[in-house]
Length: 115
Length: 115
Image 1 (cartoon, each protein chain N blue to C red):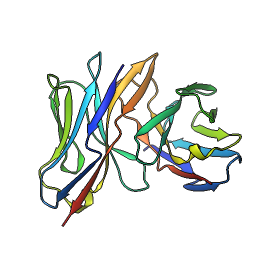
Image 2: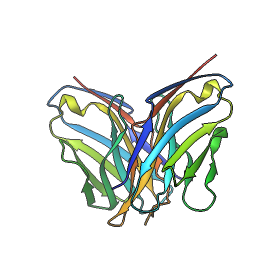
Image 3: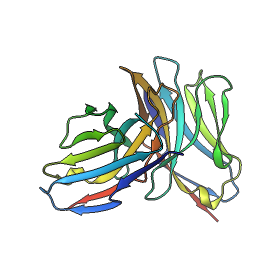
Image 4: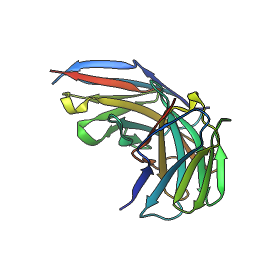
């Protein structure tokens, strides 16, 4: 069966520090991968998605970037964190060639607090 | 463009009472609709989804939702609330464009269940 991991579970970082969040998927190949952010009291906002190694699409301009160095690894990064980057970050995967009906499966999330 | 509106950011019910969480969507193409549940500090778990066919969809934990095209709605119901149902619920519609499957989420409804 497929599983999705996110690391770390929680993170407290000062403003201006770098960031690296990792997401890994097991039990599947060539998944579509997604990064979402959930700000306090708000819904989920899609940040990035990827359909293959090195293929990243950004949904909104922001202080963050994403990379996919391996087929089942998706990394969210920042060079300098802002207060507004605080939130709950969720990684998700969907089967290769996902159509509209395919479910996205979510990881446990990373709680980021920027002070 | 697709969008989702969830009416009521907070809903409170008594244990054993009917649960009704409202979701309305906007879509220029036949929608594929999802309900996800999020327990505190966890990722999202799929409750149910509507693609085609039967408009009444049954999901996990006794939840069901009915797709009503004429009302552009996909409300989530459960006949009898349980304390363990306390969580945040998200309605989502698929936006499939450019070969990618993206989920557009509503802002979420937090369900409280009291004795």
